[in-house]
Length: 167
Image (cartoon, rainbow, N blue to C red; front, side, top):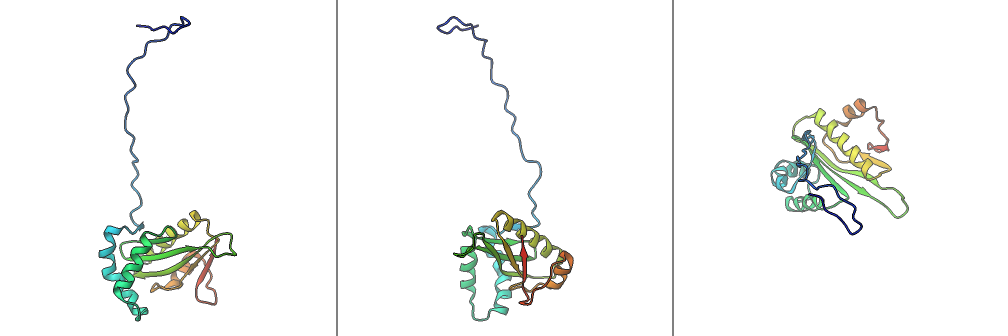
């Protein structure tokens, strides 16, 4: 059956629409390093808070929990974890800077997990690039043997015992 429009031009018949086949992403996301979700925060703080209280004895558990909870909702923060390592990084922009700086707030590991630490730092460096950060400050507050990481990635230690990475 053909139809005609006002100027008598025949139209081709319209058939059924082509079948729609759903497309799925076949590669799963890398679960070795992932952003912390609110659902796993309670389990995570069971071992992170005691490790943070070792170096910050004046802090308290509920205060640290609130801090981590607010970091989850902050677009300028990156709370990231592996199975044994967790870290919080923050992107900040001062008045005189044209590009942000990413700073390590803390890194804690419950067991020695050098490979996980390297994966976590790699994830954070990629996140820093997405924020267009000029620098990344590492080794600020950590219980990780950073000398191994610096040797593995050929970074140099700066006098303040922190690492500055220029992207």
